[in-house]
Length: 264
Image (cartoon, rainbow, N blue to C red):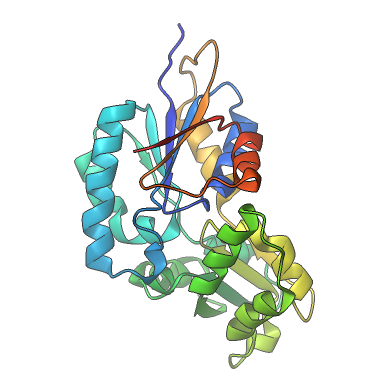
């Protein structure tokens, strides 16, 4: 039986597109609503109480409006701070986003891992817990960067890459004690996989970049296994505040199946 309920993906900006892409690849039959909370952007420099209050309230309104089968918080910062509260407030399954420390530890040869996220994410006790559980035999170095979020947003709006800006972000991680031994970097913000190529080009040596997008996509596929799907899947993007819809950004959204765009 056909089921028109969409999968709702939520982020502070366009970063969650790095989760949408592998999910659409696994579930091409699904309809998606992608919500960018540009009215609250950026989350990474906001306080924990601000995020803990804003995200559950906003998602509550969105679930009432969109009636999704499942909600994905495609934002590391929102997930590490507000995931439990969102799950407690909603009556639909909620999938969060966590730093991919486990796969990074499995792949690292030098046993020194970098975690590149927002300021809000890298200071969370949850990152300590993941490191202790899955990377106890590794040195885990962290660096928070609001600038890299801005670079990712600018890229999708058509701005040219600035190699020096990417190199400066990486230096905050690689110039730490033992940073010269990092071989694997966890991209612990969904914005960052969007600029993985630029990071790789700016790196002083070969680095392996790991993110949680593919794992989240597999989790979504598992949770929706056996469900009905719409006869004609659609994709739409909702912004929580007026947005400068440049041609490059519109093209990026369209390439990911988001052809209808609206303001909440």
